[in-house]
Image (cartoon, rainbow, N blue to C red):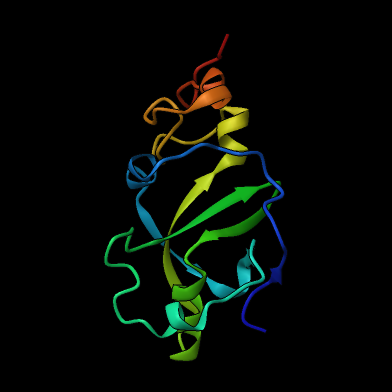
Length: 132
């Protein structure tokens, strides 16, 4: 099994992050067998294309929600890596659990350092602050 699971659709609330918002999150290595995909469709032409990330982010986007990590963008990159025998990809991880709870450590990108769209902005505070 390549991925931990496959589902059709996102189980987490819409975070409203733009490409600029994602670019503020540093990429990290993630194991494919820890990711749950949020799409069941794979376009073969995109999978085989050498320049599929030419106009987009070089890194996949993943969202942590309720203890699970969902692969939101980058399915083709992840499958391409698996076909090459690699079990790890570089991805930007949005820790939605922490954004909605306001917890985190000083070593991580905290909600106070990100410009949060929509309703998520009302949960912003720096790690360690007592909050409202």
